[in-house]
Image (cartoon, rainbow, N blue to C red):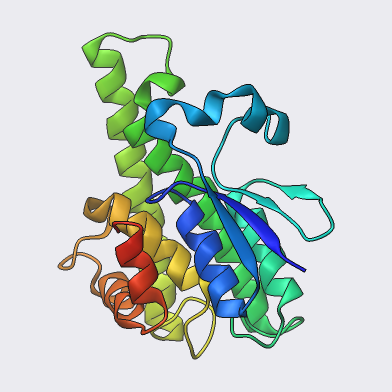
Amino acid sequence: MSYTLYNSDGSGSFIVEAALIMAGAEFTKIEIDTASGMHRNAEFAAINPMKQIPTLVLPGGEIMTETAAIVIYLAQQFAGKGLSPEAGTPEQARFLRWMVFMSANLYEGALRVFYTERYTTDEGPAGLAGVKAAAENSMRTACAVLEADLARHGAWLSGPSMTLVDVYFTMIHSWTPEMADTSAMPKLSALSQAVRADALIAPILKRHGL
């Protein structure tokens, strides 16, 4: 049974594709050219009314949206594949905490940086600049929380080895590297570099232009 991933390279589709590949799952990708507005077409809107990428269709036909929710679901579906820590452990609690934390504070922050006009009715230069600056400050604050957690627990965010939460961070960091520069947050920078060096993840990052 196969999954179907509606994909746009360089978007949040990356982490879903990475999860499916790490799991060894069978899947098909359907490319959605967001630059040409393909995501606004009626055909795709019928699948995801929010017209957002990624969208994942499960083998039984159920549609999933929301990147973090998809990743958490796949981690549960493919237990034992290294996508997340074992269920019921303190490490899994950290995995869930940081996955949702990054979705709310970093992924959303990146959207405010790149799509600032969506978050204000003041479209003048000052209004847009203020929204973007606030988003960047919020992301740096959130990264400082993650940096402090790594200082307490080790090189990875949810246990002794890399999981999808580390890959998720690396994706967002590739969009906005200034949120965690090497000098200010060396542990997060080292985590991102280690993910980039992973033999399975590296070619997916390259394919997505990240």
